[in-house]
Image (tube, rainbow, N blue to C red; front, side, top):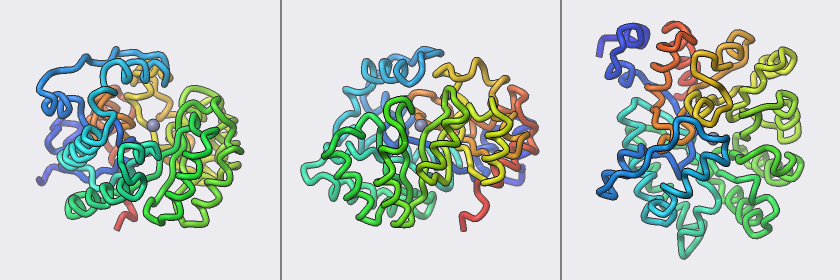
Length: 315
Ligand SMILES: [Zn+2]
């Protein structure tokens, strides 16, 4: 327990890396548990994802073919969520902003109310070990679905979700379409986030932050292509919640050693290190830190600074 994070990284002591407190502020409940945990529960193994997939579509192809039938129902979702909390705590994660997609309400006869009750139970059950801050998740692909949009407005009104995240490919709908929901979320005191710049288009990152008044960006790594956008993000202290293995496996980045998180960091953009979808990408937060160190992206001291910044002010 006396080994600090810097020493743990430089001596490759994974147990000690795990023992240091960390956060995961970019993770999606639906794929949040380790694949091994799901296999154990099912009593059989499932096919591993390819090492490289063609973007989010490639990932969904794998997930639909291999994972969906096991977890796309109430029992599967609840198993995954509980399992994810155990996996995170074992990894030394003390705070999670985990997104719960609005469509998860469809698993429950009483819809949103019952989903909320389940998540509330999860928060309470683990509160002594980890602070789970429920995040409302909404896919751009559902923006033209009036019932789901109405349900998302209802979810914001509950005052239960502490943040909101918009995801799926940025090309699917312009941020303006989401403005009413995000305005309501802002008024409710929620933190505002969106996936943008996962693969390209630095300027679209700035535009989305401005249109939706975002506090933080999920991924946003394409900002590294523009010094001007990085300076802007730095000036406004817009944090990018980066998921290195996800970026490599979905081919936004060729390999870890050339991950643009280094350029973002050097240009003063606040960054955090996260899992995205542990079930698919297979690397915990501790492992992500270790991988970045071993790939020579950051020194152990720099990774400790990033870790420290992520837990500062958690209280
Ligand atoms: Zn994500």
